[in-house]
Length: 187
Image 1 (tube, one colour):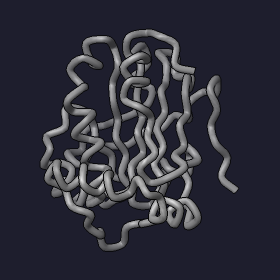
Image 2: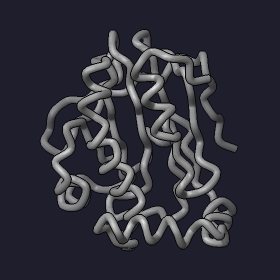
Image 3: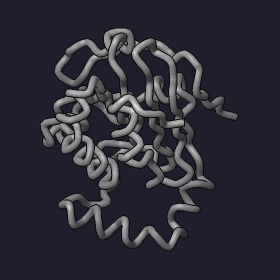
Image 4: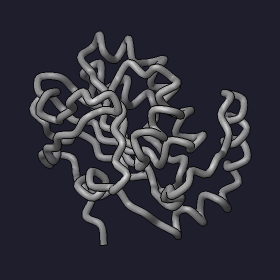
């Protein structure tokens, strides 16, 4: 069974590099708030829509002291070719071996994937994905049953909110991230 992080836990430290070789680490964000988002895989239309939403809000978040790191269970080349086309102003990390996912307790769940496929809201989510210009595409070797998770981490590296999705399209409300960026309570 996967162990989930809780509010008040120290966020596990990590060091990695983005697809351009730029170092990325949790400790480099000390002194600033951080949204650490774990996505499924780079060809996931829903994941790309979420990245697009982050990009739109990022200037305001950044101004308020909130950084973003987005992690994908994909090889670097796939991440660069698909999500990288969006010119994200924040780091993207490829984690094809799911080491960061394991470190943060991000789950793989056949049950939650089946629940997502049976959820009546799925059709409106698909319509939103397609309206944004993304497609539901399979990525060779991807983990279709990966469930996303998002963490709001304070300036000291402490988890303020750990959100583990119950469905593939279950993310933190963007308004919650806005409140966190503004220094308002989120728990």
